[in-house]
Amino acid sequence: MEGTVFAPALKELEHVKSEHGEILSKHFLEVCKHILPVIDKFGTALALVKSDIGGNVSRLETMYSSNPSRFNYLYSLVQVEVETKTAKSSSSCTNGLLWLTRAMDFLVALFRNLVEHEDWTMYQACTDSYNKTLKKWHGWLASSSFSVVMKLAPSRKKFMEVIGGTGDINADIGKFCTTFSPLLEENHKFLARFGLDDMKAS
Image (cartoon, rainbow, N blue to C red; front, side):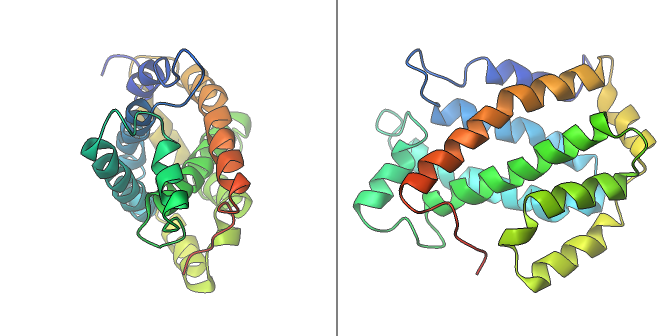
């Protein structure tokens, strides 16, 4: 593997903003898709997170593909639903973007933990990032399931070796987190403007 598993996502991040600084739908969703192979390396532990991200990316891509020029900017997918009062539906693109952003918050926190806390086990890194991000939005059942599957995470050493490839894994993780986090923050701020950032899992 040329470079680390983060290399394709980092390349895509270079194109994620328009010249006016707006997040572009296609490139943002591509970045998220490029992270799926990283999640694969966690095996069963993050299978739920992977299917959640994949499902939400597909939902947003379907809407984008229906009219690429109209939905060129990521937030246009939400604005149309705000106007038609369908944004709060569980099958809306708004809901898809919200949960995609939350899942990505979790992964960024997890990647940061792996770089910043070298003495932590994978289970500690996963649990800490889950508690900081997704836990407050999940019901009791989802939280319980999550803590069970986290125990299935691979050893930290094995995981870092697998995702490292031929590149500098710590540098790439740092670069990814630093570049991607502000986009997630923008998503939260945009959704919050319409009171759509605090929807919980049903």
